[in-house]
Amino acid sequence: MDSNPFPEDQEEFRDKISTVDDTGKRVWVFPKKPAGRFYNARIWLSLFLLILLIGIPFIKVGGEPIMLFNVLERRFILFGIHFMPQDFHLFGLAMLTLVVFIILFTVVFGRIFCGWVCPQTIFMELVFRRIEYWIEGDANQQRKLAASPWTTEKAIRKLSKHAIFFAIAVVVSNTFLAWIIGADQVMKIATDPLNQHMGGFIAMLVFSFAFYFVFSYLREQVCIAICPYGRLQGVLLGKDSIVIAYDHVRGEPRGKIRKEAPKAAVQAETKLGDCIDCKLCVHVCPTGIDIRNGTQLECINCTACIDACDEVMDKIERPRGLIRYDSFTGIEEGRKKIFTPRVIAYSVLLGILLIVNILLLGARTDIETNLFRTGGSLFNKVDEQTLSNTYNYTMVNKTREDMPVEFRLAGSPGEIKVIGKAPVAQSGEKTEGTLLIYMQRENLSGRKTELHIEVYSNGELVDKTKTNFFGPGK
Ligand code: SF4
Ligand code: SF4
Image (cartoon, rainbow, N blue to C red):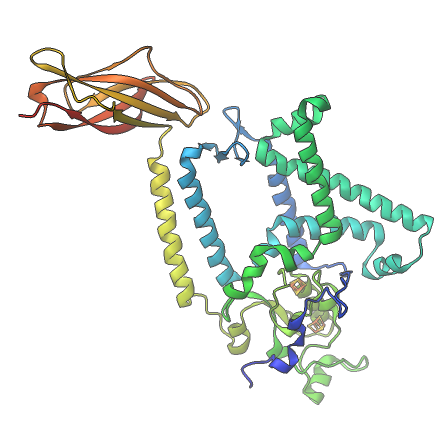
């Protein structure tokens, strides 16, 4: 068999996207309503994910949201742990790890994230599209309604659909705002007099119109032409990636079934493959492609074509799975090869990044203390035996509470005296001050003695730091 089932002269479909016609005009997609086991599973998973998306901003730990991505104030909370701007390296590393994880996942399992987890697909296919089916009917009715002249009925249907779309866009916009500025703040914007939160209200309105525009007009174009993850598929997918694929080995040559004869009989007679060219898989596709042409960038792995084809296979009494999750190698050679050299390389990198993340997170403290010797001073002679050095300290308190702080010398006899009031590390801020360290000459190890300082708050060790004590030498 020819190892390339899609020879170049049959691949003109790759020259343009399926939703643009020869004149460059958008071709509006009216996908047939999907039904089947994968669609049902996606409905349940979407419900669960929507509950998480809307519910998480309301969950609090110690009066603070459990998750917050406040990019405006550079304040991030992940599972109750506060990340301040000083933790940016940790946040950056966590994001890098996430990117490697997504790459690895895509190399192995293709665009499964798009079909099952991506909020764009969930809102578009399982919220907005379902409302559209409910108000305007299935694909053919929608097509007819779009082409029909304006009547009162058409106006009512269109108006009610867009009113519901906008109401949901407002909910989506408020939900995303709650992840950024917190649910309490969103509630305030919604309930306080308008002039107290004009900026927040405008942001909420802009977000709402943006979401409305995305789900009522842009739709599949987000996945086809805008989403950077979608564009990456071309370099991430290989012959061994598991994608939603048409089994061309089993399906070709495709051919119409004769109604009076069972498919099996016709197939044996005419040597046809299992595809009866009913095009149901094309009609249900929300991005308007024909999966039988092979893996395409437009495919968001929504599984609608699997369900459609399985139903056809049931009817013509052929095994399900003519369209299924499989790799090109799996279809051609009947085997699934997951651990390719590329997958192994990404896995090793991901493992290293995960370990570094865990180590850095483990070493992260609530307070970050730094001690610098005050410029220009070497040491002061207090008496014949005692010397002192002056230091400036800075403390960054990464918690949401002010913390009274005490400095202690670890492992060296000596004394620390803070100049001024007892230090209190202000929540979320950098606190600065000056302190003196007193040492006996006999305890110095030369001109420069390394000292270990422990930082305590309410009797609990919260940080450690190091500095040098200067003396006259031996
Ligand atoms: S739904 Fe199945 S049988 Fe029908 S055209 Fe698509 S692949 Fe062929
Ligand atoms: S080809 Fe199938 S899985 Fe891909 S977007 Fe279309 S219907 Fe969904």
